[in-house]
Image (cartoon, rainbow, N blue to C red; front, side, top):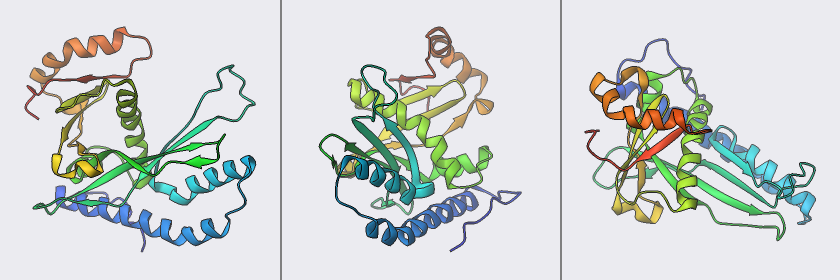
Length: 239
């Protein structure tokens, strides 16, 4: 199956969703085709081979890969291998009950390079097909790799909130310098983490009234060092 090239003209949201589904399916097919080579390359678990396995695992997922994070050495010695490696990637699409759309989960695995073990995949959050369509319609995304690159930044925000215990338990908004992403919880899919990124609104589409509502938060982003975005526990924006 060949990945559809981005056309010069996107007709409507249904057209954009069809393109997104093709990109995702193409990534899944490539993953399945590469899986036998990955399994045949398994070796005895020495620490050196364990790192090779992680690299191969990352390569196996190809354009489905969203993010990789290596733990920092406490002494700042860059020559030392990290104790932990975190990989995030797109997983099998999730069908919603009573809804024809599907969700695209981002799952995460943690590799412990000391004990040579790794965790089962756990869902970080899900992308709606509406969001995927808007990304294609409102950006220059030309393939699944671009979708993964977009998701990587937002994934880091969500994971930081989870680790720090600051992620809201009800609907919230992730605001960055250039976009607005509403999140919601669907409790019927709690077993796959019911957190869903509903849509994506780039700054170019913010209305004057929205800019006014967001002003205080945008000032906070500009004021704090190394702050690229904030989470807003506010459902009054009507998204």
